[in-house]
Length: 249
Image (cartoon, rainbow, N blue to C red; front, side):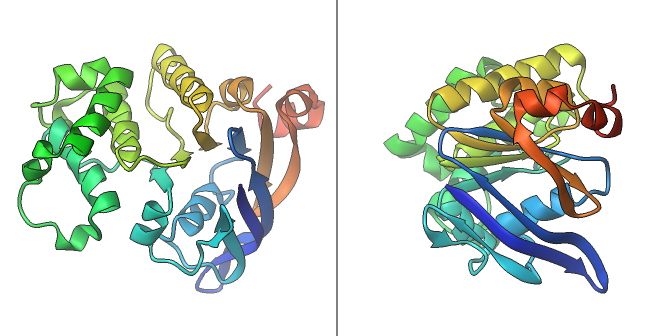
């Protein structure tokens, strides 16, 4: 289980996250909703070690994460698909996937020099690549293309595939639908539901709140850095106040 307790994040004197507490049980998809600037990305960055909390604690499977650097959090089984994908656009699709594998299974990206194709000879790496290509056949077809030449939907698939190369137990996604056509959003969310069925636990920050709550079991609404509401997906979808304030209807 992911447990976030009384977590706060500050940028100088500005509080981006204020005393947030939430949990995610194994095998759940939990949606984190809220308007732009509500603190959702800052919360995810604090969970994975990219931002130091000013207060509170984060634990996964009984291990404190807020005391660890980001690459150690990844090695503990937690992976983030960041907003904007943040791919290595001048590297191939295949090499982007191998970088995801390298960081988790070898160490800090700062020690990575030159191509990572030497990993290809390892049977365990081949197995992880095979799993990603099973989920995303288009990535296999484009494995020698530069990541920057992919369509927006394919780049999002690559960002998710790169995170899956770390064989995470908990996957955090920050706005995976940004810039995608509605049919691609449905495809990505269908994939997340499939990953949940295969045992992956997911915390999802999603712009399309209606679509997110259709695949999530529970949700939290973040407003100006605080939890403003929480409940089952059905409860949140049925709330007239939440529909007007956060869900756009």
